[in-house]
Length: 207
Image (cartoon, rainbow, N blue to C red; front, side, top):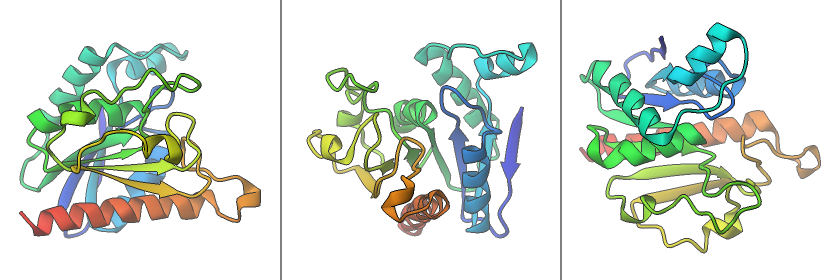
């Protein structure tokens, strides 16, 4: 099953995959899709097979292995109308899978929210090997204190020029800031989407 938020007079189509623990109906995924659609980007969301199984059984299921997630994401890409410039991305795990498919896909570029650069507390177990050889443009929208990769940590990574990062002050893995920071979750999500829209507009206009 897929869900599509259609924009009026869209300039591009973005496929967004969910994170490991929450599917396409999560509040984060719903809000991000709505905000993109309001800004001229049609968004399609879907649930990976393990998440569909979790819904059917009404209990949590562990994520499938990366090759299976990649294969299912590729099926979603193949099923969609290719009349608009295509972008792929996602939240956390979904963004990681999208980034692995990006160079070999028909997508113009990718947009990731909360990229899992490493497991929390395991800064030596980097998930960046494929990123170092990425050719197509990728935007990573990240909270500055994300436990999967803080702004300070990401600054030390040898990432190619194809990867752009946009950090949200005091944001966590879901871009949520602490109350005492003076920022709000809503404003951060909107700012992250706006960064994604600008990234997509720039690439579409240069096509």
